[in-house]
Image (cartoon, rainbow, N blue to C red; front, top):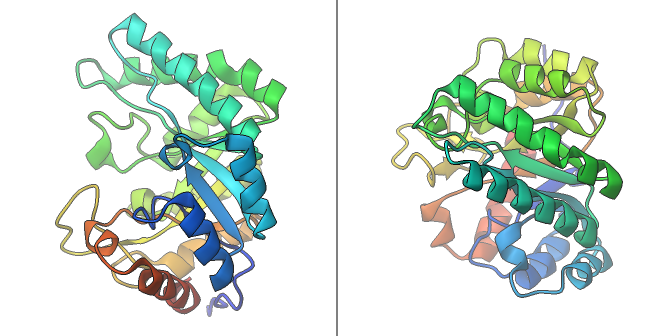
Length: 277
């Protein structure tokens, strides 16, 4: 079956981390000039800035503030560290509210000194602890399952099935799932998991990039769409089939691309978006 390609930029969102060398002011100016319609802000980009004024600047330049990255990192054998993480997630909720976005993406965390079962319980408890603040602020939280190569310290949630189970167990309208093709493309149950996520109204975000082969850095060697082996357009069709019509978010960590002229990189992103999404 032929899958219709993207024909305009109305759903294109780019993360500030993707063009990391740019300040948020530079990113906003260039994204807007390039026709990009959405921006996801990483918390480091807000350092030293008036968050509310920054959010106003984004919208004045025609950008929807799609989400704030990132919360999470709840698990630890040390109860003081767990409480510190909960407090930081509460601050993230306040920041999202000030910025004017209604979504935080969670990189849930893991502690290699304990079992994944213990880490997942602490993730559940951590999200539960911040849900009253999230609901009060009108900010949803999206559980992002991460590739198993990050299962030691970055996330004990590694499949879409685990993310769906956690979101459903939490049983809150303020909790859902973020689908990132980089982390989930390999999963033979991905289409079924996306359908389940959509059926339960839990699909809150969709992130794209590509998996380069060979990958030379497990964190910072993500590819432009079309550079690797992820069937991005097929996965996008599964997401669209759920009725999800939100932004398609380009999130690329790349030591290679961060060294390049970011204006040229932005042009490459837009071309790849048309050709491979």
